[in-house]
Amino acid sequence: MNTASAARLIALSAIWGASFLFLRVGAPVLGPTPLIFLRVVLAAMFLAVVGAYLKKALGARKHWRHFLVLGFFNSALPFLLFAYAATMVSASLLSILNATAPIWGAAIGAVWTRASLAPRQMIGLLLGIAGVALLAGVESLSLPAGGGAAILAALSAAGSYGIATTYARSAASVEPFANAHGSMWASVLLIAPALCFSPVPPDFPAAHVAAAVVALGVLCSGVAYLLYFRLIADIGATSALTVTFLIPVFGVLWGYAFLDEAVGWHTFAGAAIVLTGTALATGFPGIRAFSRQAAEPVPPRR
Image (cartoon, rainbow, N blue to C red; front, top):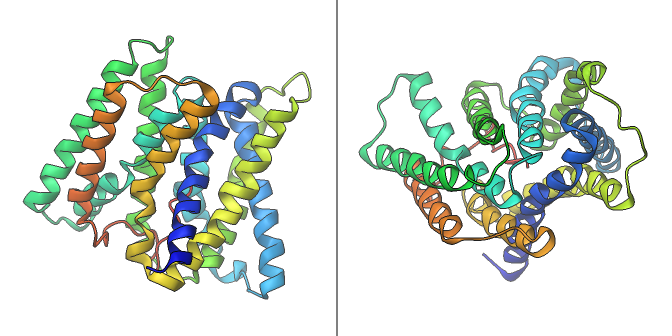
């Protein structure tokens, strides 16, 4: 990996790690559904502009069913669940729970194909459970009522990425940029009806909240995809997925630096256990199990 690719990898990790910071800023003010709707709209519009500039066809008429399935499990559902969790759970914990997505992918894939997990994968799965139990157990002591449900929602979001992984491996191959672009527009359509059941914020959000929304849509869901695709082209899908292990580092860092989140011994211990379990479950550095489409991985969108 050359210097430029290493810089892109770190930048991508920092951006996706920051997505949990932006969720913590926006979700308690706007509510999960309005925040995520704005996020996917901005992301879809940004990718539409980029697609037009690069002259990349979307192929919506041919792949619309695929985009709907991928948009639901890889964007709409996990985004909403993480946003709900962000109303109570720290950005640090969210970023660590997000790192369990590859473990979910390995477990769900084994069930789907009726294949037995290798001993290494079983150990990884058990370590992941132990790390989450440690984090959830300590964090739940300081969370408000409903904090346990919020943690469960974040884990379910990671599980949704695992479902997307399994689905994408059996789906027809679609060009990576089209997958990102099409799934974002599908997410817009899927989330829009839920706005009818969401309260509208009484006041226009403060500048920092509006900035967090724009950053989520354009930076974390638009620019980040472009960085990810460039990394895949330069260093391959397996090496690019190293980002999975770096996101929690920045998630904890941004939460500590900008939200004054407490970082205790359990944060480091839980993160180390979860990431070790993820590495074992996915066979790092050959993270073949963690891909979100047939030919290339769908970005682990945050």
